[in-house]
Each structure stands twice: as structure tokens, then as C-alpha cells.
Length: 217
Image 1 (cartoon, one colour):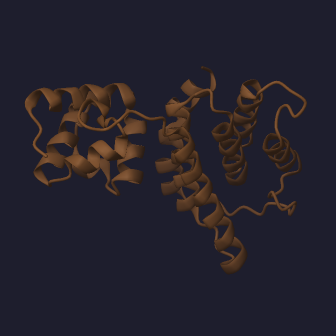
Image 2 (cartoon, rainbow, N blue to C red):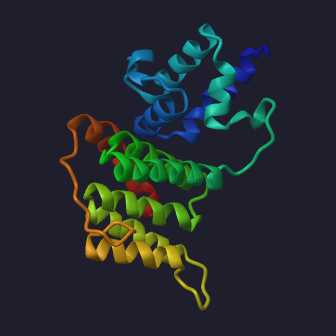
């Protein structure tokens, strides 16, 4: 499909509004396009980086991939829909795979944990009132040893829980117990290896500003 200048300008504006900082843009490019943003652009501001990303996608025939990756295609040819639930499920799939590797191979896969954080943040971006991603994000932060962030996410989950006899929800209660006792969901004590510096930089520190924006919204 051919895209005219007006559509490319709309794509640029949509990128700016959907990914309001370099951390969120870097996360999207890494997870959904399988690319390193620093290899695509050396831009020193968000607008230039978005423009370079679009130029890169056009040159490599990946413009449709970019539109699908950020789900901002409604202004071109997609119907608008909320990705929060599907992004949350992608995060849960990563945690399931992580647990299987830990159980079967005694392997602590930091990349899967980082990807789960990315998907849960994406789910929150699409629907900040969706409780479940906050609960799941709390559990991942707990697994990697970021207790303060885990408790903040859990508190946000509590605030978003639907009132009623089951408030704040079974999943919230299970994760709260795991955090309190420093356990996996299986009730075994968590044994964490040190966080690799590269993983901490890519998946944690780069998300700090966006994460705090959402948790205090």
C-alpha cells in the first residue's frame, strides 16, 4: 500500500502522542519490531527519532509493520480497538514461559521478564483503568526484586478494583501474599540471581519515567 505525505505526517503525529518519551518508543521498537532504536536513529529528540523511524520503515518496506506494531493504523486503514487485554495476555504468556524454563531448566530468563514488563506497560497505556496489568506488573517487579515498585503497582491495582464482595480480586490477593512472603505464586521462596546491567538498563531504567507517570495518574 502506498502512503502519501499527509498520511506519513499523521503517522508521525500519532507516534508522538502514543509514545510520549524515548523510553516507550525504544520499548515498542525492541519488542514489536525486533530492532534496536539506537541503530535506526541518533536523533537527540523524540520528534527527530520518530521521523527517522518512519524513514527507516519506508526504505525497508516495513511501514505496514510499523503501523501494525504501534496499532495506530485506524487513521489509514485499521479499525480502532483496545489492545489492553491482548497486550496483557502477551505479558502473561512471557511469564508462563519464564516459569516453565525456571522449572524445567533451572534457567532465569531475564529477557522474558523484561518483555513481560514491556507488554504490561503497553496494556496500561491502552487502558490505564485496566486493573489486571497493574497486578501482573507488580508480580514481575517483585520477581526481579523491585519491591517498592511492586507495592506501588499493587496499590494502583487496588484502587482500580471493582467494588463488590470479591474486592480487590483473587489475583490481587495472591500476588499480595507472594510479595509479602517473598515467594513465587507456587509459595516457594524466591531465589534471585543478580540483575545483569544490560537488562537493568534496557528493561527497567528506561521505563522509569513512563511507569511513574502511569502509576500516579
